[in-house]
Image 1 (cartoon, rainbow, N blue to C red):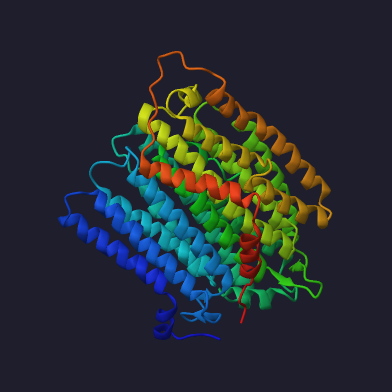
Image 2 (cartoon, rainbow, N blue to C red):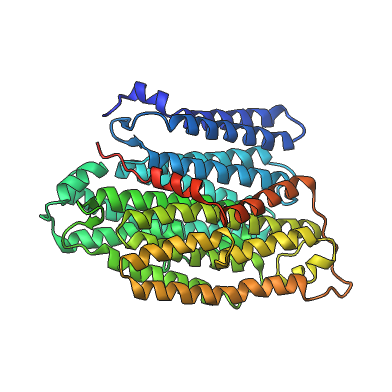
Length: 492
């Protein structure tokens, strides 16, 4: 079912609420003296959008705006994740010393605008819509990365982000133009129908898919499109780093899955996905997955800056998520969706603890965490240990359950080599995660370290994320059930 343009407006209430929130933030910035109120407005508006997404989940599946967008459970799942990511970033910003000062109206307006672009990425059902939404998210992300205008590191990160993003964007749209030429349409459903017979030139189609994959790979920080991640994560304000590591990465995966599965594959009678004849893209992504997780983990071993270490960790986790992508089964895709929720909890939590320590000490390196448990930071140290061990994949934490589902899907499809590489990489990651825990608990302060204080505002979010990480390691049925129900692409 395809809905007309005017009628489609009733289906995008979450997006309209975000637009309204952006306008209110910009207008309030002109009259409000206490700029913290702008963050509260952004938080309330995002919460309302999240509520409307939950209501929209009951709407029938359909095409919107002449098949430019789609309303389906898959889009709803990711919109919920994007809204939660934005709320966490705004909450962190309200408790961050980096964000204090002028231009907060611009900051929160850009943050919500980036979230709006992610909503459109999740619902994109057309190559043009996908490209425009991805560019909208990228442009706002560049500005947010360079928000600390008097910080040279932040400006350098924004410039590198812009340059890498421009190259990746140009490569991707060039690949999309090839696909349009081969299929004669920009709609994902019609592309699938046109290419399913295998009549298109295989070499041209493979080149087009590789070029398009470059743009998606840049967004999810997969090797070899990961070069921007360490510098951008290090230079951006910590709340923005957390937002990019979770929200932006999830948006890239949403677009990647919607493009390569409904558009470039079809669901077989046995319940498994089958790629377009002659174009074996899963083998290419399998190599990317193994290289991505291996490079991310090995490079993280030598890092001393926590933001940079977590940046390489984020690259490695993109490799883990790609494991579920390559197996061509709904079980693998379900594991990916579940792992994204788990990753949200533990990665946002880890960056939050880094921000708490940086607020008190001004340091982001591992030495700044020396004896954290013994100089007023016992609570952040315990929470950080929970997040780091969950990122490793140790039981009984949510990260273990997430990796279990990923490895189970891989083994069931007999990708034993990929599973072995994933296990070995998890073992490697334990070293650099455990090194941080050792520094916090076993390296005693020498008296020169600054005491760490935990505000009620930051503590509430930290313990909420830590509790969710623990609970999902024991009882995860509702979330995996939600992931299972959300794994449905509307194709008309």
